[in-house]
Image 1 (cartoon, rainbow, N blue to C red):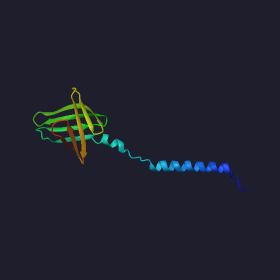
Image 2: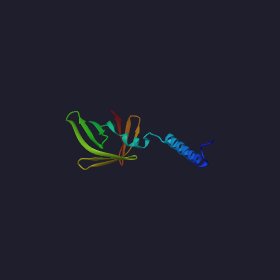
Image 3: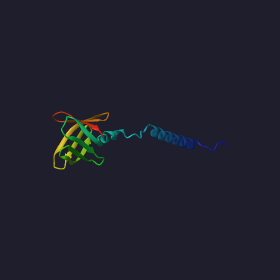
Image 4: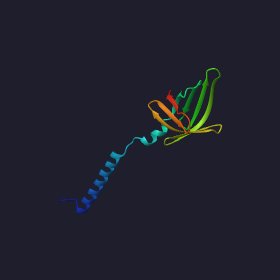
Length: 128
């Protein structure tokens, strides 16, 4: 005696295909957040190594979009300038409290961050 009718076999087959589709969908979906990596790579503390200056120059980029530009003069001490920052693809914008805004293209190679202004030499920063 066969308890399954033709219509119930079709329902079981359809449900089986749905389950297999869900498994396949899960298998091909990545949990990796690659699309967001470009935004967070500038986060951290960076020391300027080029162009050379008489002072020590640091940039601190915080996760919340705030940061500090620090100029540490061996004779006069450190000055801190707060800023907000944001990234849009390969563009980095830094807006200082006083109203000045710097626009850069940027790239990272190893532990080195390169900031390319619209004019002049690139600023080279090493992670600290």
